Image (cartoon, rainbow over all chains, first blue to last red; front, side, top):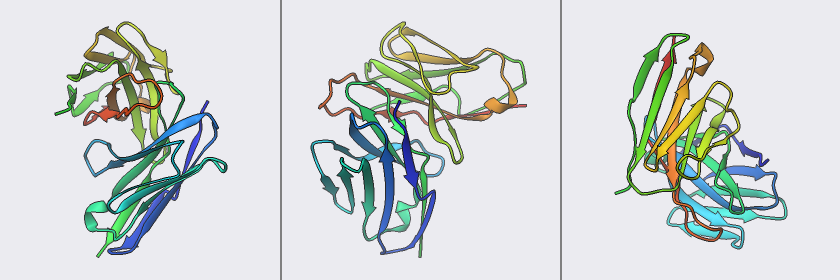
Length: 112
Length: 116
């Protein structure tokens, strides 16, 4: 089955700096890659996703890039703000399969 | 507004008890999921269901069972709770889509279960 690895496990940046979180996946048939943000004590919520026919997608300060050849995808947050502090999860889904396989999460801390 | 509701936020049970965790969604979604979330291990899939009375094992099904008698409700059952099942349990639901369609997975707020 699919295996998703996520790095780093913790990340601390200063407000205004950029943050990058990286994930790799094992199944070359995976074609959908969402990113979820989980604030402390709250439920995970989708923040951005990308499909395998696209190399990059951007939504305001967040962007996701996908390299199908290398089987890795990354989340980029620019001009970080304190409210970006949360745990971020990447995930991958294969074909029409129902289930997502999640990474182990990255705890992002944005300091003033 | 999308809603996935878990019946309890916090639950304390004793070893050997039978535990029921309930999840209800109001979006008419076909697919429902149960995850457990542990520090450093991320979200691990326990069981999922792609329709009423259908279920499939996820990555860590041992010690758990599920029930989906109605489309909107998906129950996780711990037949005999053990201390290593102390965790945060998250329910999720998603509409069935063929590949290529927008297909957001929505999560419940979670149930923090402590088994003493």
